[in-house]
Image (cartoon, rainbow, N blue to C red):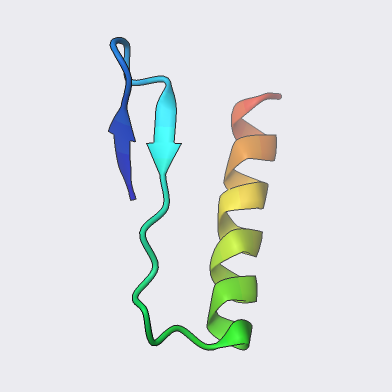
Length: 40
């Protein structure tokens, strides 16, 4: 994960090409929860 944009407002997700569906689901769940907590 890295940020981009003139003010760091873009988050880039860069999973490996060999990621499994389960690993991708788990990673996206972590990101989703993190964003929810940040918006509180």
